Length: 361
Image (tube, rainbow, N blue to C red):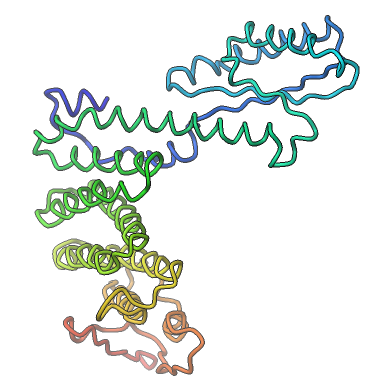
C-alpha cells in the first residue's frame, strides 16, 4: 500500500496514519508466535499419533501458519514434557520430535522441549527460549524497517507533507524496536518539523487536525523522552515550546479553542510526568519544574474561561480550589472563594485571570 502511495503516481492520501496503527504493531500483531502443547513421554504410539494429528489439525484450522507466514512471523513450538516411562529412552523421544517437526512443518530449530525444572528462568531451556524470541523479534522488526526505508528516495522527491509524516513516523517507531532508541531521534524530528509546518500553514481540515494532534502528542513525548536520555535537556524543552507556540497561534483562529487547550493540558501533563520520571527539577536556565505546573494551571483556567456559558462542554463544575490545589499539592496555598460563574481572562499576555462571582446573579 505504501509503495503505491509513495512510489507511484498517487501522490495524495486521505489521512496521516491509520487508526490504531501503533496499537496494531505493539499489541495485536506478534513478532514471534509461541504455541504450547503437551509432550507426555508415557503416551503409547497410538496416543502419540493421535496427539500429533490433533496438533496438526489445530494449526490448519486456525490458519496459523498461513496468516503468520504472510507477515514473516516465526513460530516457536514449546512442548511441555511430562511422564517418566521413557526418560531412559532418548531415541524414542527424538524420533517423536522429528516426526512432529516434519508433519507440522515447523523449523526444527524453533521446537523447544520444556520440563518442570525449566520453570527456573535461569535454566538452559528458559535462557534458550528468551534468546530465540529476542533474535526472531529483532529480525522481524528489522525487516519492517528495511522495507519502509526502501521508500526513502521516493519520499525525498515528494512535496506531500502527509506522506513525509507517515514515512518518518513509521521509521521512528520501527527504529525504536530494533536499534538503539536514540537512533529514532532524526525521524521524530522530521515528523515534528513537518507536522508543525502543516499547522502553521493551515494545511488541514477538522479530521486531519485531529490526526495532527495525535501524531504531535506521540512525537513530542517520544522525542522529549529520547532527548532527556541523551542529556539534551534544553532540546527537549524546545521541542515542547515549538508545539505550544504553533498551537497558541491556532487558538485564535479555530472554532472551539477550549478543545485544543484541553489537548495542550494533556500534552503538558505528560511532559511533566517525563521530568518526574527522570527526576529532573529543571531543563536549563529558566525552565524549572514549577514553571510547567504554572503553565498547566494557566491553561486549565484559560480553557474554563473560553467555554461558552451553557455550551454543556468541559467540566466547569469542579470547584476552583480543588483545581488549583491539584497543581500545588502539599502546600498551604489559599485560594479565593469562588461561588459561581467562570474565570475571565483579562490579560492574554500575562495570563492573569479575574474570578467573576455570580453567586447573587
